[in-house]
Image (cartoon, rainbow, N blue to C red; front, side, top):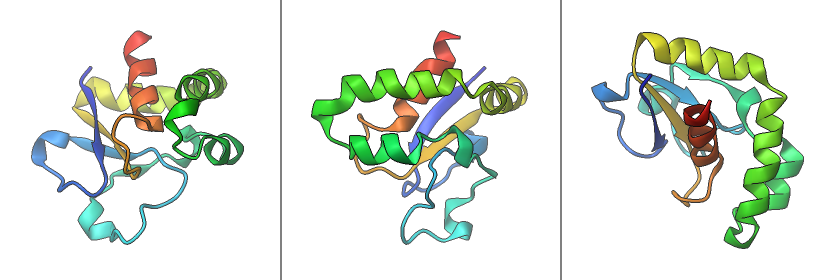
Length: 115
């Protein structure tokens, strides 16, 4: 199972494999053609309330991770979708956040690898 993450604004590459957008909102200013998203899995993203609370504030990072993991545990269908796809080909979880270290895709990737 090969899963990686990539910022939506970075040029897609063949080695990305199946590209899954894991944000609730479409990345601002990015066309669908340029993004080359195979699946937009909105329901795997953090809830609107959690996303707004976090606001990409690194000070809240540890608590955000804890809360988001709890949401992920309540979402086995979306997790299964990603795992099923990753059994057949490489999967890239695509996100729009500017911060490459403190975003939902980082937490999701870690969560999937630990399962």
